[in-house]
Length: 192
Image 1 (cartoon, rainbow, N blue to C red):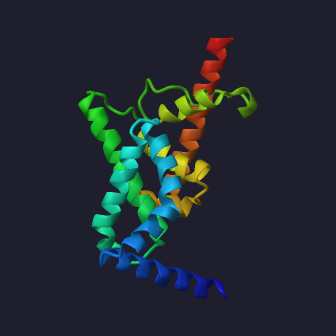
Image 2 (image 1 turned 90 degrees about the horizontal axis):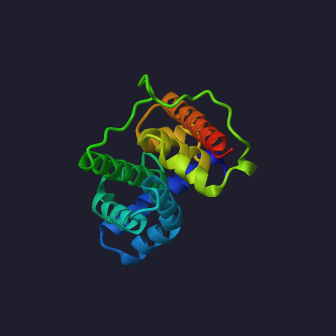
């Protein structure tokens, strides 16, 4: 099957599945859940730092059920769902920061952590240190990094999910990598 025929068939299947969910077909919604729940749980867990991942996952699928009528087939149903999930996670993080009276630091702040420090190799880094470094990222950088480097989406797909340009996706991933290296490098020097 040619690429255009395949993508047309996928788009039609996605539109059909979305239509069945909208009409109340529980089996169709279950199929959507089975196909995406594991990866969305991992995304929610990483975005929230592990806290509330189950609740976030339930909220994401509740939102998907409520908003499935807005799916138009302009992207894959999976991309639409990831965008919905990422927006929800970002909203929750922003609300949490607001409630705690914290302001997310900006990459342009003069007192931001240095980003050019060389980091240790991944074999020298514990999983806990890496998770902490990811949690320390500003939400937009964290989202782009997780979608691209962890979930394996291309920059255009990340851009579609986050509603940004491809260049912004590349920039956010690059900044996230630099910040993670700096964070891990600082931990290595403070532990040594």
